[in-house]
Amino acid sequence: MSKPKILILGGGYGGIMSAVRLQKELGSDEAEITLVNKHNYHYQTTWLHENAAGTLHHDKTRIMIDNIIDMNKVNFVQDTVKEIKKDEKLVILDNQELTYDYLIIALGSDPETFGIQGLKENAFSIRSINSVRKIREHIDYSFARYNNEGQPDELITIVVGGAGFTGIEFVGELADRVPELCREYDIPREKVRIVNIEAAPTVLPGFDEELVEYAINNLERRGVEFLVSTPIKECNEDGVILANGEEIKASTIVWTGGVRGNHLVEEAGFETMRGRVKVDKDLRMPGFDYIFVAGDCALIIDEEANRPYPPTAQIAIQQAYTIGRNIKALMNGGKLEEFKPDIKGTVASLGKGEAIGKVGNKKLFGATASAMKKVIDNRYLFLLGGVPMVIKKGKLKLF
Ligand code: FAD
Image 1 (cartoon, rainbow, N blue to C red):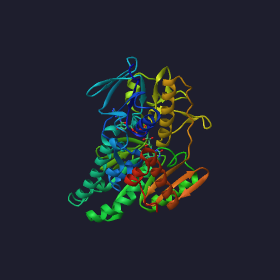
Image 2: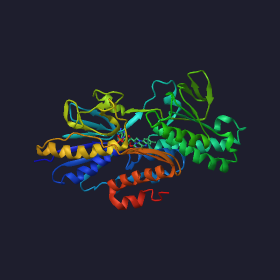
Image 3: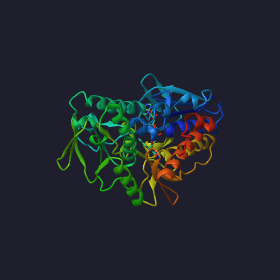
């Protein structure tokens, strides 16, 4: 009898962890597991803002997939998913087609531009190793051009759209990187602008007020300007135009204002909210008993707060554990478990040695929060590949 085929789409937090868990849960004679990913490496999306700012090399952020999964137990296919044909149990890749008995969709997110004119065409976004390489190079080159091209202010003005988690973490890294760039390209620091623009009345909406105040004070002291309650109306080649009509000329615009589920999910004809599937409690796609959804493509409701959980790596990783066990249960006729996120806390980095966060009921600031952030990062690496992975890729200097 042929073995059931389990197909995993996407090798980010949700996908790679599903592969790791399934190779542990199932013997190689029990199922044929295939992981499809665009690249032959997994990257930690949560570190990409550091690569974009140029404070951490992207090789630190990516891990070759054959260093994580057991290639004897999991077939790895490096290819790009083009289409999910839900009724035919078929997935079309650039170079081949794959069938499955069980499917895990973990294709991550796309930027949400809220229909802002010109944003897609003219702003960078922090979403992959390739995208952050471009941002780092672009900032470097803009600074290099400044003294060659008559010192136009826009070359050393960086606009970051969105002051949520990603935006704040990114401006924190920029505040560290800009002084280095100024030294390298002979530019006075006070000439450079880092402008973080947010439509909501506060930065880090939903975060504890005291932590937000700490973040704002810290970042302003390090040269970040905040414009809150300020929607961006348009983005063009020269910069951004705000809803109040003001124009900010900038050669670098990075949009961090939100994400939606990967477009392939919506295009497959599944019902979505901003591209995310409101999954059943056992993480299955409603109406499709053999399809699971993990990470940013999945929408789950925080019943206490009566709103969706924000998409996070923390949840994607935990979902992979549940999906691993639930596929095993499905195959063996067992009972499927409900997914219950165990939110251990949230820590946002503000740059080198600086962060804010809440772990349990405890608020953390500065160096302590920053050390906690590294512990969280190292814990993930441990789950992925044990102590050797932590030694190889971890952030070992906590303070
Ligand atoms: P991803 O990790 O994005 O993985 C998706 C994978 O699918 C990628 O490998 C991609 O290459 C692959 N893929 C996409 N399309 C295709 C295709 N067509 N064909 C083949 N492969 C494809 N969360 C936290 O919990 N804590 C944090 O501190 C935190 N910090 C963040 C900082 C930044 C700068 C950003 C951008 C996000 C942060 N997040 C954080 C959110 C977190 O990174 C995401 O929620 C998480 O990555 C979601 O995991 P995922 O598996 O759904 O998607």
